[in-house]
Length: 93
Image 1 (spheres, helix red, strand yellow):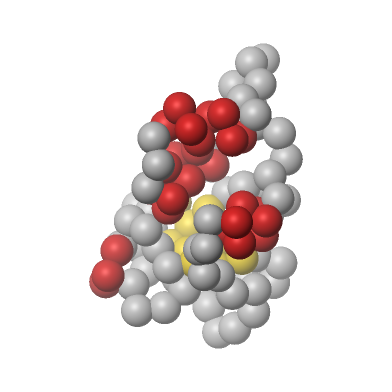
Image 2: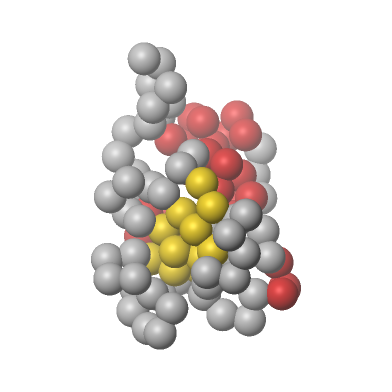
């Protein structure tokens, strides 16, 4: 299964998720958010999201990384998987 290209800045803004696009821990071109898997242990914006590939990774914990945008959005937005799949425009291959 694949997903249509995601407009990460729009999704994050619409859901009022704070993010940064530059700074000490931000790879060029990425959008960084507070890692939803680290929770309150993340004092800054340590999870980078590559808007071109939708891959994501936490600078603090290498176990907090992946290539499935649905998994990240379920945790980040705290919404049901079905809502995420509807939002992502799931496409069967």
